[in-house]
Length: 372
Image (cartoon, rainbow, N blue to C red; front, top):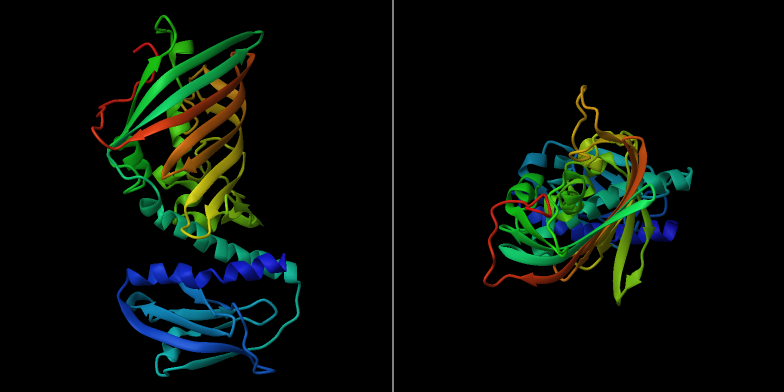
């Protein structure tokens, strides 16, 4: 665990450089962090402005450099390293010297507790970098995605299978990711592969909207919303090598589950994992699991009205989205629930087969039924 903890601290320098470029810089502080008892350098010390995500880390020799934006000159700066006491003091006290020597004292405590707290801060920064780099790591609009939609619904002993070709039009793509932009810019049409069009609400209705909502990179929601990341419990689960590239696998959950975090109005259990490329902070995969006592028939993010009689109960579902070559490649949603006293299971998938950014077909609406 300590090896993983120390290795991720090396990332803070690169995380900080991008964030520092976009602000008006008041001062550039440089220095070295050393052990107050031995004068030896302290590697990978976490350094940051209190109450913000702005920070860096000392290198292997204890050296650091941090540009201080104008709006932070009156704040405090902290130095935190595993096995040492934290130091906090006004950042402007470092402005008068060309090179600062910061001495921090050793301290013995439960290393596991420190790892969890410090690691969470670093993982927040990784997620923020992943969010900030979405416009550079994913396709920008306008473009079309050709996809195959499949939904298998089992109710009692009967089974209904929907298979359709879906054309997705995205006016803006990932250039300005947000929930509002995704809803306004994403349109789609559905061409059923059935011999006869189905206009019945129960079987003709698709859940393509729910599948598209799983694309958190497009909507910058949940753990990819920088304003929310500090509200998650984060843990570094693994650092795998996939197709010759290095990744982080970060688990996430919330103690107080929110609609903005889970996307589910009534969720009472919510957890998941996100896989991020170490080189460019691109998202490779998001997966999660949610339990909810009930869901609106019109969508999991909506409330159920007091007089509403038709809604889902005992809802449990898992979901995943894989990204490949600047776009989603496959979105999966597996759900079980009770409706009108009957147990229902659904397996839905949206598989992207082709992307087209030339001679784009524009759409002006979303087709919610296969028979439209």
